[in-house]
Image (cartoon, rainbow, N blue to C red):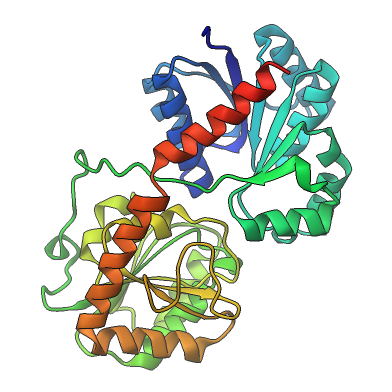
Length: 363
């Protein structure tokens, strides 16, 4: 069968989970022979990664502001020039502009939600509500995210489905880092966390919980960047643990997972986090937040611990439990690795997207 053209429109090609998912999807579809083009608004490391694959990329901007009328005209003209069979969009701004321009150009649009709708704020959620009916199909990365879209955006159930994120388990090209390189003693218990330094991730909770644990010969390693970096560093200084909390703001997390004794994701709300899947794939015991012990990836007590959202005390207790129970920590980690291999390998994700794109391209 002759392969058709896809145009992927994304708000960002910076370092992030959604950006990594897009990269893996494009790489997987390229191996199947699809012609692909990427349009982005904010540049970042994935621009070069995509170009190394031979993927054509376009950065679009408005003339007077980022999303002025000229921006929409440029995107519309690009779509008419490329004539894709399907537009695939992800992240808030890209979803909104792709729906409008795809509708005008009469090209099917698949919009993807990586987080709950309410996390975007009132104005963004309103723009999403006003344009979501223009999408041909909508994808959510978890049942929880799909429910938030239906509740906030009035989307009929038949027009939204779940395709969970997956990860590439081929780690043969990774250069792993050592404790010695970071100045961490070999016998230290290392608690790891990965994510954007933004309010919803609740790294402030994690720092407070870590300090409350008072675990001897331990450290907390936080990998990520974002607007709260200064505030979090000030928090660490205020609590007098600057010698025990490490911030790595310009590093790929994959090189560090082996150093962790456990992994913590204190976020109030998450979709299907790649950082969590990656940590589990390295057979690390994980602690995540959820309501009523429910989580889209982790089963409490089987392949990780699910603690109540907004509770520093519960988070502290979970960290202390894993530190004091090595056998249970190892057991949870081994089951975590098995869960990822069985349910979250990237080929499953790529195939699900391919099936949907194939279906829409021949409508």
